[in-house]
Image (cartoon, rainbow, N blue to C red):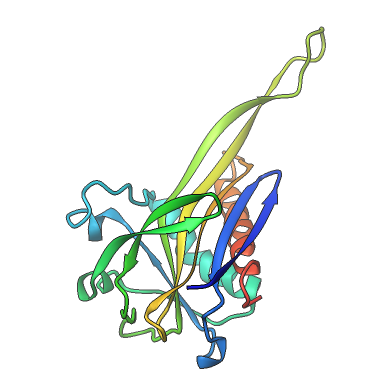
Length: 211
């Protein structure tokens, strides 16, 4: 498979994406659906894999916002999230993908799989693996003399691996790794989470040929 790499970087993090030049974008409309690899569906098959760990609040924000942000970033149609029953109806495996100067191991359908459910028959599926949000505090500024003490700022980190699955070819069209950090307001967590999601998936989709 011939592939090229696009790398976006900023002070808040990075997104590394490979997208295959073999993908025939004229073979169907660029309609997307979304699938999150979570432990409740796959832990028994892959007991040693580190799955996405999401709170109820984080799942709600993803469900409410993510399809909209993907559509806005690339101008593609997004049908929503696939039903978790696709994990029972299809065969999955741990596969290794090269990203820049390292490799990532991800949950992936086996070659030839078409991932659909009763509500969605999309051309592409964006599969999110090892997705995590981490709030943390960091000391910034300050100095060695009076009046310039360090101050503590709250941050929110988003990390994940992702796979763009092509239902026409039954193979991975692209894959990548994202790690970004934004400011975090503990008094308005909804705004902080939606802001980092919009930035993250803007980076991903704008790195693809769909944008």
